Length: 395
Image (cartoon, rainbow, N blue to C red; front, top):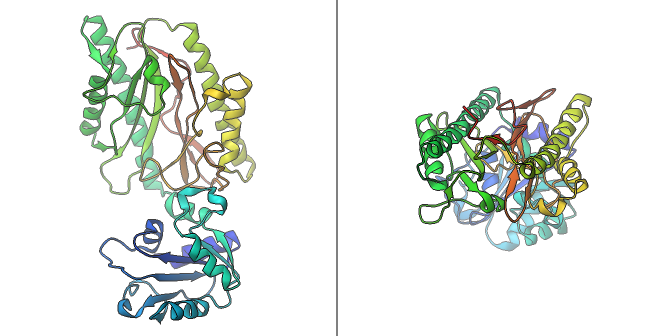
């Protein structure tokens, strides 16, 4: 745990302190921020307070007095619940505005780890409880230069694998051989292993109506054959197996099994890519101008474009998600649909921009990964997709 880093983040957020509370595995975020792990045994409630200035303080149960001995700071001890309330008041002396893993109205559920009763208890002591959502982004979503390099490498590899997958489809069709979504999916999985990459699940390979279901995945038992004149969507995500703190890449491309792409696919792709580019340009302009930007605003940019084109009702998921050591990380999401993510987009974080239009007979998604630095915006795996790929003309 880096106390100095936490205190600098508290100062940036204008908060007096950050209060961590743990009971029966309720808060994995607290464990990671504080540098605790599964080897620690906790059966009783504990609190850990990091003030903006001064030394941290901890409150633990008498039968587990050593529970937080790996962390710095003065130790307070309680036995029964009455003592816990009394000692919590001592722990929180001189604190007025405290951050906790809480989100008002559950607006950002990804950081909601503390139950309402504990929030009520802290408020009863005269404190204002703020959400730790922006603080969590600092410790869960930022990456260093070495990690950013692993992200860029991952996305470059994923882009190459997409075109290898398209080539496998083309070779099968030209040879008159049957090929399925599942076969191409497993080809991609094999490429992950060959390149020293790993993923939390197999990729999406979806043809025609299957591509209209955003989270469709083929299996050995349930899949479709890929034929000439089919529309194909490939969504793949993976990271380097080493180093251990490598960052994921996550991209989506679309193709048509023919030598030219019918207008109905081109039309929808242009709507989707227009929304994607509107969102990306908003991010670029904000960084250039040094302007604060929130996740929901970027979602609005993509969603408004697609809605103006008449397809808003078919854009049925958020515009993007935080990317880190997990493909869906705990930083700011690009979302004003499923949640209103009012967290700031901060430097040294990464997220996807992936609007989609999902119709009954096909769906189109275009997904890119965006890294925001202190004064730059990097889109990995460039050039990004600008048209549906005619698979039988590729290569």
